[in-house]
Amino acid sequence: MKTLILTGSDNKMFDVLDLTLKSKIEYCTKHGYDLMVKKQWSDITELNFNAEKNIGFIRVFTAFQMLSIYDLVMWIDADAFITNFNYKIEDIANSDHCFFVSRDWVFDKDDMNGTFNSGNFILKKTSQTESLFQSFAQVSQSYLNHVMQDQHVLNYLYFSGIQFKNMKIVDKKYLNSVPELMFETETWKGRKPIANPWTKDCFIAHLTGALNEERIKVFNKMQLI
Image (cartoon, rainbow, N blue to C red; front, side, top):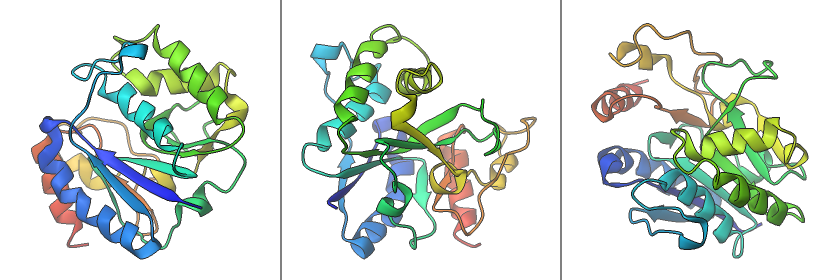
């Protein structure tokens, strides 16, 4: 399978992206995957996506676009980095589904009603991929100003049943493990415990929901673990 790792950010996250990029480069080198880093974003006029306001939607659109070249496309957020190089994308996306994602940090893997975090996801080219894209494009038009953007729309497609059969929620150790070190930041104080937090067995560490300077401090601490 031809595989692409896709990552990037706008200029607000460049400092974080610069830190996490090394792990993505090394991971792609090990497994023979291609890497694309997006630091500039353009409007998607046919879907009313604005580069200043809708980067969440545009990153999903870009991932779908790249399926014209690749069999598998994985988006990894700027604030996520790879911590276990032994996992292969094709082993995580090992079913006939065309979208793979993990639950949000607060939800246990067995919480069937727990929504997922779309900061890291895998798209797979199947006979149903175009159907998923068309559903995403259509529903997104009703939520262009929603604070959660693509995450809200993708969760809607899953939990409403519109695209349930084509989407799979995988174990959090693959696509959304959050380190307990996040609780040392001011932003995370007072939050609920992290369900299934990051361990060395996890594929990705996601430094989600914090200020950039806090993410950088946690990242640097994790290099010593």
